[in-house]
Image 1 (cartoon, rainbow, N blue to C red):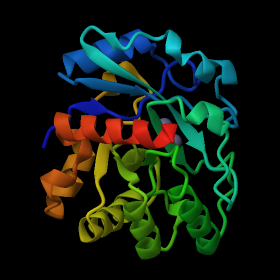
Image 2: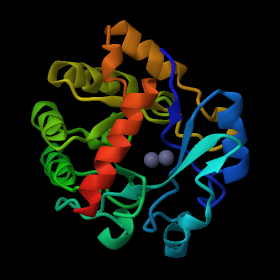
Image 3: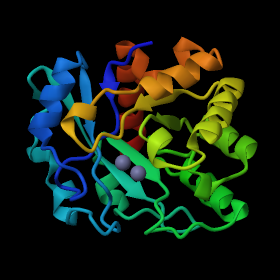
Length: 240
Ligand SMILES: [Zn+2]
Ligand SMILES: [Zn+2]
């Protein structure tokens, strides 16, 4: 299992991360990746960049050192209505939008509340990917949510960083990955890098998927053509 795109990384624009766009792009090149998504935190997080960071992402070149740069965000889910912390007018212009629960911007609540929020997020056409859903503090009803992700073409992230950073994440990620296999929902494997050396390091996620015999064709960032086709499809949808 190998990947062609790193779909989740932070730069010094989120102050708890320590590398620049350029350093992350160089690391992606060294790892042989074709794509790098820059996904700093949406504005509601305490360490987030100012909203101008997102409105000015067009300043970044489309490609650095042969690595295609996807201008993105890790947006914060703010309430059970699925509200995110960037306006739609900005989200629709981004190449890669991850929606995540983070404790500072959504205090962990009940399974019912998390489920409700995910069902609304599934319906949001500007969201591409669901970030680190294996977080123990944000448990949700697996089957209805994964089915909704399938229906609305959402990609589920298997976040390698979660295994060390989030308690109970491995077991939850396994259950989520099994549900994705069951309902044929594509996943991406990502590092959630906070330093350039972590770019493309997804061993934990690969091992988990191997353990459950996860189908290669459902790994969206495992195949360049498949990944490109998804981006093109979403670009069309967002412009509707
Ligand atoms: Zn996150
Ligand atoms: Zn992150």
